[in-house]
Length: 325
Ligand code: ADP
Ligand code: NA
Image 1 (spheres, rainbow, N blue to C red):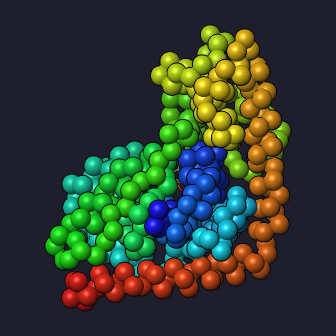
Image 2: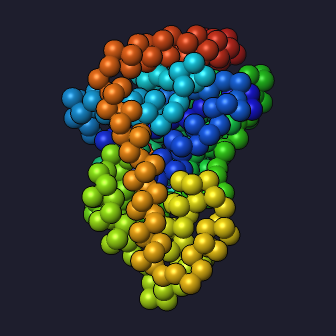
């Protein structure tokens, strides 16, 4: 892989879904790519009203998580999106290339904006900003959860349109979507994806949950009345979700995991998963505490922004030249 880019919004909580579907995969691929760019995409968080103090803290929180999970600043450029003005600039140029119809079709806008007159315009246009994020780095691969697939298709459409109308500038990026873990479901409501905007916090585990909280949430996770452990997303969404979480956390394949539970019931599955989750998250939480208030963190972000700006600036110059700006 030539270049990997992805981002996470600084909106408070990081769920196990964000981690397993996206952030953990950043770490898995960082050695396979020639270049890695991981951004805290604060401009995306502005699509809904934010408290400025919290925004600032949350931005550093995500950056600290990037380091705590194992992203290595010698291999990956870590930076805050708003520190690199090229993102907002390129976003406008791509906005003018976008069509109402194609943005209207974005399912996330339909879900969040619900087409009402009071829906924020940023919610409508943010997929274009995401396209700019990706295209500025001549990204070849974008590790994301399944919910971002449609936005990546828009990114490719815009890149193709630009290349056709103004000259071959952009590389076509591909989504990197995991076979297992790309759509972690809610613990209470396994028909829908695990999301931090859920009403009940029993529905999600966060990266910072204590062992007690993890235990309580997994114990209460919705299963079914069959008490037989096998993978069947359609008929056993709750149990299948717990198995998926175990699979991504341990790196074991599903067949082996299912086999290991032969003759056992949901109590055993949950007990085991509690232990696996706690063991996985504890060292991440420890590193997070060490890094979060360090000078190292802000230094890494400063250097990251300098490098990102240099790379993005080259692409921005090409875009401007092509457009006659
Ligand atoms: P959220 O979707 O939680 O509001 P972001 O938009 O910042 O947060 O998403 C960060 C990354 O996490 C994206 O790549 C997204 O696809 C991924 N993601 C979010 N929810 C899930 C989930 N339930 N399962 C797997 N991946 C997810
Ligand atoms: Na998302």
